[in-house]
Length: 151
Image (cartoon, rainbow, N blue to C red):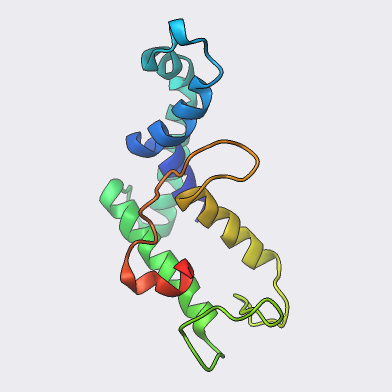
């Protein structure tokens, strides 16, 4: 999941535009705010992220992935996490209540796995929290098969 989020933050041009480039542009004065300035200074960083993410994808899938391949990998990961949330409950329609949430590890209380996944989902589809960085892949949860995660 980490490599997927990094891919959509740094490698995917739409994700890079929505996150890194947009957040850095807010620190640059309007009269020199050109995308090529940001791209110039971040080119070596982006190349490193391209290399790192492709190494992880090659280990996971046996090959390097393009955008469609990463989208498919993300969808399968999200289905896996949703399946873990759905197990052990009487209803797949909700994640539980505040007093008895459903957990990835089927524990009675939320744990580090749940919070880690939540932070990655926030990074993909929402804002990062106290830092004004946009969603790197906002349509990640639009598939109706992922309704449990979306709720």
